[in-house]
Image 1 (tube, helix red, strand yellow):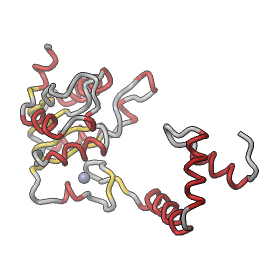
Image 2: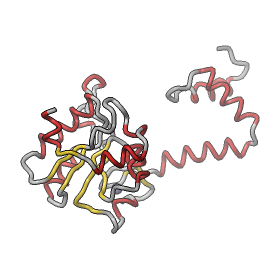
Image 3: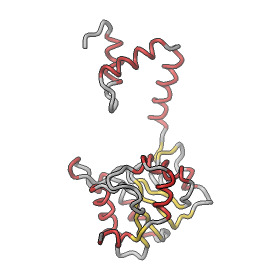
Image 4: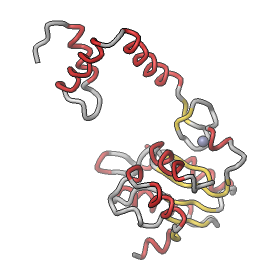
Length: 205
Ligand SMILES: [Zn+2]
């Protein structure tokens, strides 16, 4: 792609670093911004910069938050003995949308995936094991997508905490195998949390 302007070229190159955005789409977006009032571009740039510099990860659940302890963890209306293990913030949002879960979350930040070079130590698993050892958690619900990586991650965590006296369950498979949680509709997702099954029985199937 030949550019008549280095400034334009730089903007297009930066934009095309985003997933799913090729050079042509990047050019279309940049040209769109050029047509809009300057304030719009400034607002976008400021939102991105401030997000990047000020955002925090909750010190308890690791969810993305504006404060040290996220709203969910600091709420007195949540059941701290019940913890739902999820991959990332999109799953927290999907489950929160169902309004049917009153426990807390633990955000792993990904799934174990040897193919992608992601091992247990790259994820937020250690703090979860520590929380279990501390003894406040009575039940863990595994709500990772039912892919091979999700199952591997569940099993790894299960092995680490098997000896502690807590219930472990996994969301019911109303969620189709291979589906990402965030795409499940609210009713299906709410039902699969309510109808969760003991983790160990899910191993035998
Ligand atoms: Zn939190």
